[in-house]
Image (cartoon, rainbow, N blue to C red):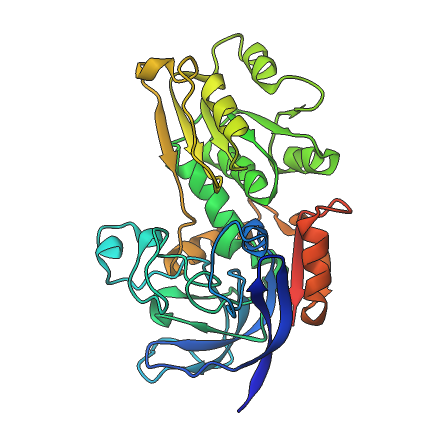
Length: 357
């Protein structure tokens, strides 16, 4: 039996590097040799036991790599080709996919269906913090990397770029809009960049980590607010002369940030929620205008599939956004437990780590 190194969920508080069999390739699958991946905030929730997955699962959902082996029915690709696959891997033929909601594609999972059915890597099937990853429905999900782009330039495409941009797109941002983005972690930073690309002309970024506030300016923020130094709701209302923002993007997943987003919306504004929540949310009566404020609340699960990945890589190739600065630390796969410790405790100004098998 040929084995590979993989980061495996053992129990809450323990993700360890161990040996696993290299996956066998089915007719519609592709085996990808991972050249670069990363750790997501969702992986930290898995590590803490806040998001349940089965024991023995290989974690990770942001693969960049090279096709090692193609399934017998896969056409249009070549072994040895550099590719990425989105964190969300739609089958293309489920009810959700055919209805245009690829992120909620619940078919093709090997350990049962979950409400976020399109998210399979590191959730319902083995993920990509390993030497190899098996990509299901390869013809729907593998996207060739354009010549001239490095692994790190496309590393954000599978998840955080797609999610952050998705939050801006789902909010329907228009040219001239004022947008507030609460939390400037990796997804919030991508939401800030996405808001700028969508045409927002005033972008307000909220966080407290100096490095992230500085990064937010690089991504397009016109104003930054340190929530530990001032009340962001009051500050945003002052910046907008009491009008409120057209769009507020919640990128952390807490009651307080969700509520703050509601409180800064203008009448008829849109709250775009990107955070992953681990408890019931409450709608405060005043902020919700008793349900009479013509507000819109939308949610987004990282859009996936090869066409989405192609579009995101086209944005990177055009130099309209540069997400390379988000990679602040690099680790070998052998050191992934140390990488989890750094990223999980948010030390040393970490934003994203690159993991290199």
